Length: 122
Picture 1 (cartoon, one colour):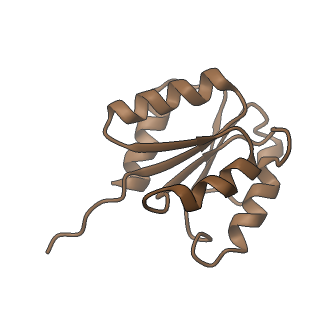
Picture 2: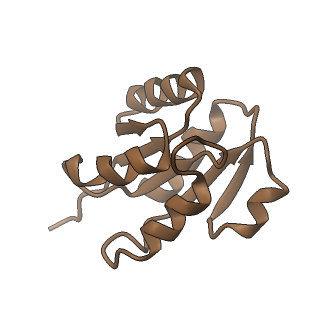
Picture 3: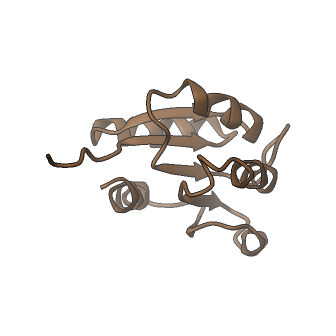
C-alpha cells in the first residue's frame, strides 16, 4: 500500500496580506492550509487540524507569542518536535538563533513557498 503524502501546512504570520496570499497560493496547489496570527494561536490551531502539519511557515516578529517562543513550545511536544519549521522573516540576522530548517527573507517571490511546501510535504 502506497503511503499517502501529508499535505497539511500551518502558516503563522501577523501580516494579513502575506498570510492570506500564501494560504491561497498553497491551497491552489492542493495543500490544506491552516493559519494563525501569532505563535499562541498557532499552538492552539495545531490540535484542530485534521492531520498534524508536515510544515510550519513561521514569522518571527509577532505580538502575543513570537516565533522563538513558538519554536520553544513546539520542541517541548514530542509529537510535534520533528515538524519542519521554515522561517519567513525580514529579520534574517535575528533568525540565526532559531532552530529552523530554512530561512526565507521577506519580501519573497511566491515560488519560494511552493518549492518549500513540495520539498517538505511531498
